[in-house]
Image (cartoon, rainbow, N blue to C red; front, top):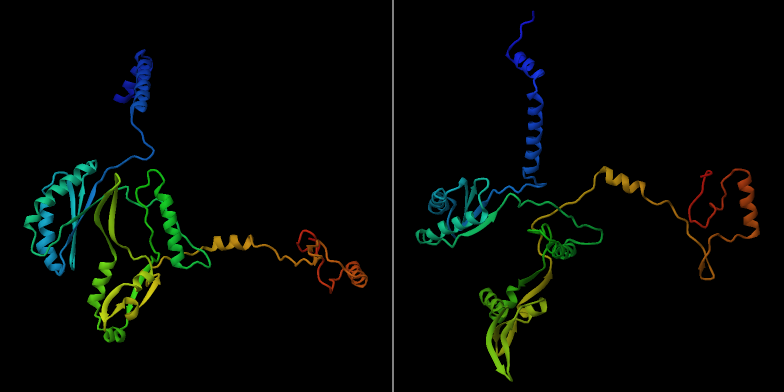
Length: 348
């Protein structure tokens, strides 16, 4: 007799028991109910708030930033409930503290806690420290689409302007959070000072900077009420091009006005590149272009101002070509020209 263990005895008991079918039906109903009631998403939204706190302190060394600004801020961040990690970076003139909350923490609540804690520590900040800058990040703040603009005959400055046009179109797409243009060259108006002409007119760089700041501004000048209408007045204007910059008044010399164009060279265009974005194609792309390259197309002769499908031959040339074709030799007069503008050689 075969010895049966506990599992075998349980299986033998339910093998011919009427309750087995009832248990199976109950398990199937429970499984269907669980599948229907379990929430499902194609892209589950995982909440992991991360907050960057920038701590500027001009003129401070990395050691001073770490000891006087970053370390006290780290201690205050650990006092917030829900904080899982705190990272920090110290550099000259600037420190940064990154606070990461636990999974599932509400982003608005996390930012509010950070703001409250930072606002309470402003009075304890060291001399020379500026107001902290707080920026919220999330797990969804990753690029999902990268577009590269390239083309022969277009420089980086032109492609950057096209990129900004594309940026405006992408920002109008629903559910798009952020669009950035990188690797391009923005427009820049450069003022190249001439020391000789500056000395001749008695102008220094500080006065030029102050004049540019004063002329490149627009301020409200009040309201004018007349005939039951209210007109808002503004003074000043923004500098738009290099001609506006060149016409900025910087000083007076011998009773005559001195403009910026008299003491400097104004350049309007792309700045000196600070970064590059390179684009290249692989072997497969190059092979695809090689296969799609069109065949050689012969020139068509124009007769009477219209394109002729065939070349009109004289009697002697036509006889020579007919003789060469009959002997299977290539014609010295060149291949025939057909209306479809394609070469036919070797019977193809």
